[in-house]
Image 1: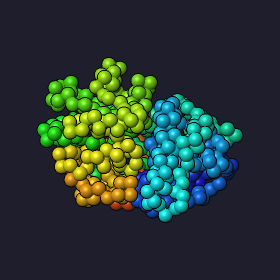
Image 2 (image 1 turned 90 degrees about the horizontal axis):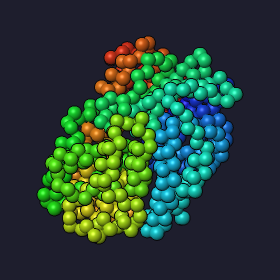
Image 3 (image 1 turned 135 degrees about the vertical axis):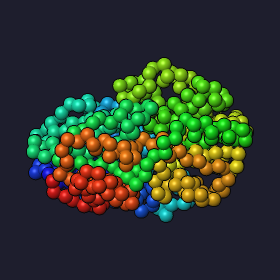
Length: 454
């Protein structure tokens, strides 16, 4: 087999791995590049392969940096099946059309305000393109081995604990096995079940998002309590840019705990993201994928005001102006979506708090806020930053390096080689050092476009 790293090499976004044997080409993940302009421009570059030649896509999970390129792949000629777990399929039914819609909206705004060098600005793909791509999805079960048609290759998916449906994917040709780690969940996540313990693979791809860092061990419930309490006391609003899948549901759980304990006032909690609203509803549809019992899921729903329409979104600010509240809205790195409108409304008032609830990729608006920039570009205009900026570094859905090392300790034999991916260069290099020091395994940080023989 031959493996080519077409994404998530030297960066945390754009996960794409091309696996080839003598007669089959498989793409494991097909994600969008996000963050810096030079990374985003890769989404528009012609792929190094013919999409029509790809026999199948194996998808680790639904996050856009792993799935968001699929509609473009189909648009350019890919006609094979897309295999994933049932929950991942349900999430992609939500995320991919939304991604197409947002790209259409971004292109329309660029044309309306004239801030694109392209005339006219066009979306990478449309909502309709995403709907067409969804017809090629095929749901499979955890722990069952599936053989690819007319091939020696087979694959098995195991629970990764990152978000609903997230999977490790082991591909095997009868002689050699490759385990694609995707994104590894936390070992003690209060919402998600832990990742499956894997004991062997000949080759392993492991993420390194937090390869050079340890998560804060403070209880995120306490951090949210302090931020909400202090902001409400100032008469301000807490705006939380949050990933629609995973992070929004975790934040709601912590707020639910605080309200149940009577520790924060009964201020309104808005989830202003149609995608996040639908993703939250999937908790009840896939109870085996998480730890929350049905009664807690119901209580979270009762606590939360879900705003579906644009008119309802606008009313959050027009009808509730000047009163303390919590607004949770996508996207999590403030790269697009409804949260941008809330940022424009609240970011200029020092009474308010912008709470960034996780990792912010280099170059994103969230990253700029964390770095303390005093102005933020939104929709072609500069907006002064006067609100309080806070970040939670203890709610990540990614394992840190110590948790990854603990998970790797389940292996009963060393892999022939470990490939360190899905991390910024410093984090990936640090993760390689941790693995070499702890286990003495052969670990390698691949470059973008690099091909290795297995």
